[in-house]
Image 1 (cartoon, rainbow, N blue to C red):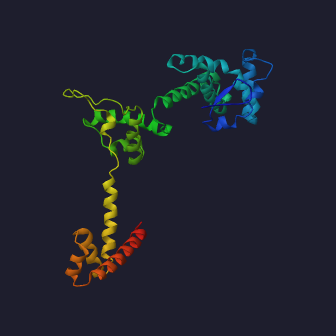
Image 2: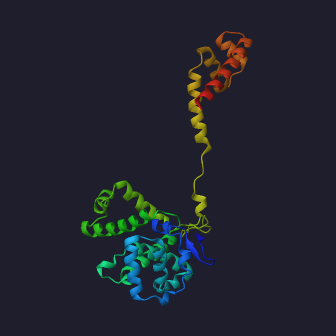
Length: 286
């Protein structure tokens, strides 16, 4: 999921925001003579003011370098969750970039106070995305969580499970989106097909895979039979009678000839012509 950008050894997550896509000159800022600890508060305020006026990406890169220690500190709070610190820092950097783009130094708020929720939120979203067994759009993940909370609140209020219509009205979204988000909650955890379906009375439990249905070939035959029935109905009456007697009633050509009061040779010619016509009609039906 990582791509190298500029400086050797620096790995950045695949872009997930417009701010990250625009950030193409990060390697330049990494070559600045000052380290992140050399910058002063006055330096940061000056750069933020200049960046607010010019939106110069090189200024933003310098601000990113200056606040890498903040990202490292916040990422360190998540190190015991099974992800490398380096990866968490890279994810947190995306949040830092977004915070820099949105920060207004004129409001008197310290940047570290403003940026912390954004950086932490980006890291938490990263864990939330990885926790799902199947890839689900973030919008639906968030809607799934909101819908779950709405269901609990409505159940307590109404004294019964809420309907989809009631949950959708509570969330202010369509019923279709609500239903999709709730159903996608099943994608959070998956069950192996090799899992045993245990029952108290089972001495040799079956696996889940043995309960999964397979395609019924007879259904395809059923559809083809419907086409064949229509094709037979399109034949001339005598040809149709020959096909029915020969292939549905299992009569011989001699028996069909006697039934229709024609010669057996005539039956053979009409049968061949009818089969040719049926093949043509079946091809057209497909």
